[in-house]
Amino acid sequence: MNNLPSHIAIIMDGNGRWAKEKGLKRTAGHEQGAKTVRDITIHCSNIGIKYLSLYAFSTENWNRPKLEVEFLMNLLHRYFISELPIYLENNVRFKAIGDISKFSKKLQNTIKQTEEKTKHCSGLTQILALNYGSKDEITRAVNKVVSKGLDITEKTISSHLDTADIPDVDLLVRTSGEVRVSNFLLWQIAYAEMFFTKTYWPEFTTYELDDILSDFNTRERRFGGI
Image 1 (tube, rainbow, N blue to C red):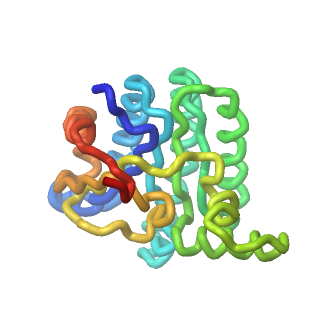
Image 2 (tube, rainbow, N blue to C red; image 1 turned 90 degrees about the horizontal axis):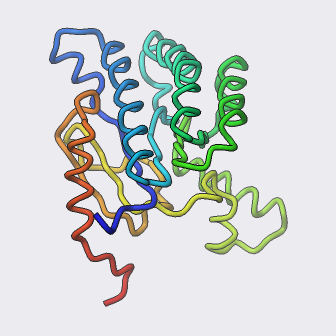
């Protein structure tokens, strides 16, 4: 493929339904989903993708049952501890977007340490959206622009988003059969190609991603032109 996207964004959906259909607890789906994150991240790194954004925890996910939220917080902490060697081995830089101030100090520190320990990596940048909502991100960006006394323009807003140093999304994928973007990177996906698959995230494979990339490779992107 000679037309790989620079930036892939994925809405990782279907963990709970995958577990339910197998007679398992929802937490088992999240555990398996974390393994899929590793597989897809390594694959994207190997084939030359530069940026991979993953919707891990939204601003709306706090409304889930308390025990599930607590499990997800613990899973995130364990994920960063276990994945640090994987990041380093595969030359992957980690970056978090979203308002992580709502997390525990322990988790905040782990996130910041992971960013710091991988900042020298020059391959794929994996971006995890944590306590992230695009409306919240845009609101925070506008407030920053106003506080600096700058004019509100596309350029000033873009430069104050959480993704200020990252190119816009080329390819957006959502798993599980749902066809919506769920408040994810609304600004950055303005001209993204979109793919929706019925596959639950825990069952999403590198082979299916390659099929999507093959389709993407055939698309003509005109960005509003002819």
